[in-house]
Amino acid sequence: MTDASSTPHPHLHVARDGSVLTVTLTNPSRRNAQVPSLWTALAEVADGLDPEVRVVVLQGEGPSFSAGLDRSVLSGGGEDGEVDLLSLGRDEARAAEVIAGLQRGFTAWGEVPAVVVAAVQGHAIGAGLQLALAADLRVVADDVQLAMRETSLGLVPDLGGTGPLVRLVGPARALEICATGRFVGAHEAVATGLANVAVPRAELEATTADLVAALLATPEAALRELKPLLRSAEILPRDAQLAAERGAQARLLRGLVSG
Image (tube, rainbow, N blue to C red):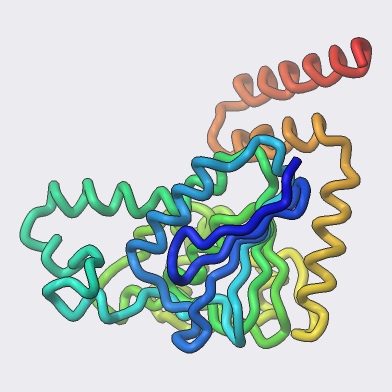
């Protein structure tokens, strides 16, 4: 295992500490507003993740996790080489193709073998909330304000957030949250399953570190089998899921005997 750091995007810093990778949004002056090139960079980090990384932490620098889409990319004509999102409205097939690539910056985190933890403070709006939802676990500060605001722009959430949102809070509440664009605070986030735990802002970093330590203390082979097993439970028929359980257990038992 190696320790290293890199900046794959001007507003993204990646740091490796042994088996933990920390991915930080670094545009605090804009409350970590996101642009399409950032999503491409996130996808590259996830797709290139070292298999020896056991835990990934997603976090945002400054007072907010992420205020969502940088609206400059909706101004028309493109912005500093970014995808011109408005121009995609002229060609539905092209829009679907481009969006599919951008979604990868969010959906890829569910496919990595590492457990992904989002540490969320302040605003997590739109793309910010969808990035938090891309993680397996969410620790939120008591000042958190979660919201899906895409409908206020005449759009819908399209970065992979609708699936986890519905699974966590149910379709009726998900519809209400997205349609109204209202803020969800820390207490409601924990009560509805959007967050695993809420803590005072000053304790967010320490609580996240404690969770990471607990994950690292879990036998590695079991944890690596557990994440895909629980994710498949949401989509597989009963018999297929039972078969997945048997297969995972058989591999672990073989490891215990041979180890």
